[in-house]
Structure formats: C-alpha cells, structure tokens
Image (tube, rainbow over all chains, first blue to last red; front, side):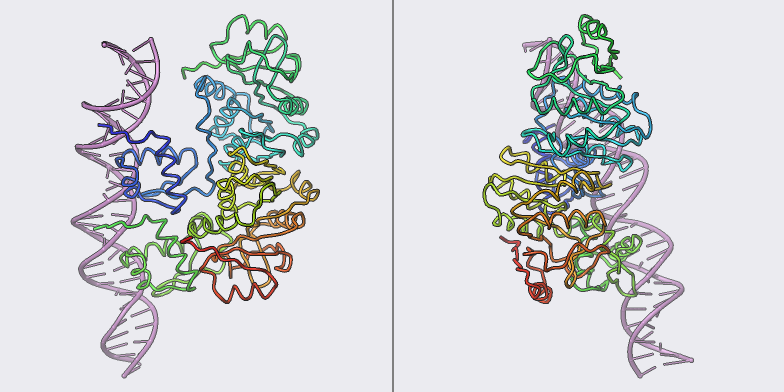
Length: 261
Length: 261
DNA sequence: TGTTTTTTGAACGAGTTTGATCATATTGTT
DNA sequence: AACAATATGATCAAACTCGTTCAAAAAACA
C-alpha cells in the first residue's frame, strides 16, 4: 500500500539535509520527518550507505566522514545499463598494481566503480572528481589528481597544473571516454577536454576507449586523435556491424559488453 | 525495556563532548545527561575505551591523552551545529569576485556550503574534493584544484603538483582548518597536511582559521605555524573566555558564531 | 487501454540492544 | 582493620531493530 508523498530522490535529499543539521538520525525520527514507513527509511539509508553518503548504525545512521553530492542525479539515464556493462567488462583489462589513467565521463566512471568493487589495488590518475572519490573510498588504491580548473557543470578538471603533469608521466593503461567516434576520428565537444585527452593518450602505453553505441555516428567540433592512435574500443551490443567493421578496419580491436549478466 | 532516545553514535558523541567540556565525567552525570541507564553508559564507556578515546576509571572516565589524533570517525559530527554556524558566519568575510583558498576539513566545508548558497561569485582554490564539488555545483564560481595524491580515507589531495602550484599564487583570503590550537601553536595530525596548510598561509594576504571550540586545548604532533602568522579565528559560543583571551593576546582577532543565529 | 516493472508497506523470525537484578569487587571512612 | 557505601560485571527478559519475503499500489511502458 504505497502512499508516495515524495519520490525517492526527494527523500534522500531530505535525509541528507536532516543528517547535515544533526550529524545523526534515528529511524524513528526519519520515519516521522518523511512520513514514510520504517521499511522505506531503512531502504533509503541502505541506498545512501552503499554509495558512501552515510554510515549505518543500529537504529539509524550518521553522516559519513566524506559525504558530498558526488552523484549528479541529473546524469542522463540514457544507456545507463550499457555503460554499466561496459564498465564491468573493462575490469578484465586491469591487473593488480597497474597504474591507470581514468578520463572523465559517465562511462569511465562506471569502469571506475567496477574496478573499485573488484578489490584489485591500482594506482589511478584522474581529473574527474567523482572517479577520484570512488577509487579513493576503498583504501586500497593510490589516487593521483593532476589538478586544474573545474569545468562548469561537470566534475572534470581542465588545464594546469594537470596538463603539464600529464606530460611528465608514463602509465600502463588509459581508459578514455569520448563524445563521438566518426569514421577515423575521435572528437569531443570542448577544446580543452580534447587537449587533456591527447595528453592522456601520449602518457599511456595502451589506450582503451569506452564508448557506448550511441557515440558512434555523430561528430563533435574538436578532434582528439585518429583511430590509429588508440588500441582498443569497448562498446555495447547495440553497436552496428557497419560501425564495428569500420572501426576494426583501422586496426582497433573492438570488444562488446553484453548487458545481460 | 529499551527506550531509545538516541542511537549509539549520538550517545558516544555526547559523551565525548561532555568529556571535552569537563575533562572527566562520572557515570551518574552521564546517566542524567544521556537519559540512559547506568548499564548503557558503562557499555558506551567500554566501547570508547576499547578504541582509545577515553580512559576508564572507577565511577566514570576521563579523556584519553592522545584522543585528538585518532578521532573523526566518531566525533566528526559532534559539533555539527557549531560547524554550520561558523560556516555561515564565514560568509561575511567574502566579497564578490574574491579569490579564496579553501583548506580541507568539515568546518571549512560548511563555510563552502554557506558561500555556495550565498550566490556570491568567487574564484576558489581548494584541494578538498568535496569542497570543489560544492563550490562548482552552482555555475557561478571558478574552482581551481591544485592537485596531488588523495589522502587515504579522506577527500584531501596532498603533495605535488599542488604543493608547487600553491607556491606560485597569491590570493585575497584563505579559510583554514586545523586539528588543534594550543597556546601559541596551530598543529595538525599529518605532516603532509601541515605542509600544505603552510603553503596556503604563504599564498594568502588574509588568513582566517575556522575552529570549533573543541579544537582548543588538545595538541597534535605536527606544527603548522604560530598564531602570529594568522589574522583571525572564527569559533563558536562554547569557546572558553580563557582560550579566547589567550588567543587574542597573540594579536589574533576572535569572532564567535552563535548557533541560534 | 492493458501489461510489465518498480516501489512501497506490512509481517515474521532472527538477532541486537537495553535496563533491571544480584553477587562480587573496590573505595573511602571510622 | 573493619565497615558502609558504591561501582562493577554477568545474567536475563523485554523491547527494539534488522533483513527477508510478499502482496498491493504506482509508475513506466507499449
């Protein structure tokens, strides 16, 4: 018998607000404040605890030491399942103690999430604040942030000192995102982003591009590189055979992540 | 016959708060203050003693000598209301289009939250991932992250390239956090953190330390600087007159944030 | 519109926390 | 040194929380 006064994100926000004001809250308190049943409150707290916003305790929860609004509830749920599948498959490229560059973007973020769950210890280099937090939240990984200026409306750092820093490192692997793969070109919608990505490609011995099938076809204004400069692409099962063979024709290995699993 | 008015972490926090105020506490006192039975108080004290926060004595407990280094898992939210009040007051130091350094830590984070809510556009420099996200989430601010290696279990970046970057900038204002203010010294629990804070002090024309009243008294291992090198302190109304006059005696202006607002 | 998927609230057994009780140990006083 | 007063730790039942399951209600989808 659901009686929905608020949708889940509203409840989550209200809980976080309550916690921020008081530092801790009991289930009873929240049940009253949200006009929801204890079961729902418990589910909400579990949800928030899973992503590190709060710490669960008997009878309630406390504010997690490192809680911020990492999650942009705005993230387009378009192709979410595909991105998650790509992220899970990306784990098989990772071996313990590798040093890996993580580009910004939601697909790469899913890969970071999967790798954090995999318990493989790595050294990560990333300019994405959300990815840095995910990889840093389990104490196993060393996380290095090159730094830069936050790109408005995103979680990505651009420019210096990060750009200069990237030119001085060499890593095993880079997981790259892109806005569009057209023909022989990887392109992006921001000149600064494209420049950072180029630096990442230079710094990595092996470059893997994570791109859901929607990225194939459209084109953006700013070139990152040609397909010849990357080694592999991971995409999802909705990639057309045409796009796949066109990509492979440039010497790039294409792997497909299946959503079911 | 349990009658849960507070969940365990809230009781633990309240006990530590009580101990910090009085140095010691009897079981009777705590029984009254927590509205819990002596058995429960004893169990709580045993819990806190096991992890080194307090020392058990007959009839009560005292504050453990080395409690400031370890804390934050339990005490991170004890002075939540005070920290929020300090953060709100900090907004009055901010003018539009200032460039401001934000140190890491929960108190400074509250200031960032208040400033983000205030709609004043600023340029922010911070090595705290959470603060960067808060200030970046409203599109008004320019946010610069110097970069570095993520400190395990926190949201703070340490080391290079950020340290070098900080040495090359000059800003209007710095909001600094600290783990302890003793006598004439600001100290912190990590050598690297202390070094970053020193660099921030060097880079700022005006240094404001945000420290709730619990930070006064205890001491940590690593010196940041003497009080002479900072300009102001913002604390809460539970700051003792003794600590206040001692701080002002070193030429530091002390402002008090009222919780009621 | 009808169907599928997700979300919600209730119910139940299992596990945890809490407060009272009581024999024992500790402290302070005579 | 003996005594009274109090704190302690163990034990136990009551109350509460937890995780799971399940059916009904929304929401999403076709």
